[in-house]
Image (cartoon, rainbow, N blue to C red; front, top):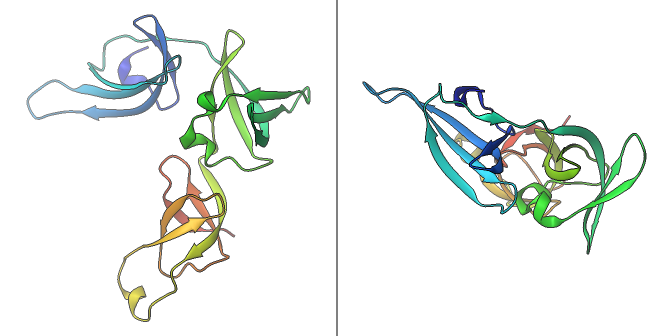
Length: 186
């Protein structure tokens, strides 16, 4: 597989270790040749590194088994998920889930679990989640004329920037990839 074909979430083998692609940026700097700036996370150590590759360079694609599971709750052993086919519960350690991913998990959420050789290596969240605004500043008259956002605390404790017309108690849709406000939930 060419590095130019890699997408976010793809798992590759690089220098003997497994990495998941976090971010891919195609760069074409003027008269120079095109390159791919790739941010990848080592699945064993959790370290994130950036590398540059030519788009035509080859990457070793790794077959990863994916299955849908339902998030139930978090306890001392980690995050507990239920397999939707066998109804077996599987604890996944917090270091595998990651703090950034774990903050968006809500009970009964369906996620895709990626495993390699029987070992769980990652979780793919839905692109958007619905959250309730727990607290936010009140609307100031005239503030809606400008395109300024205000801070809000969501039901899961995450801070996000929302438009001034959003009030406490409203449900909003958030992008899990970058934590940005998308729209009011319908």
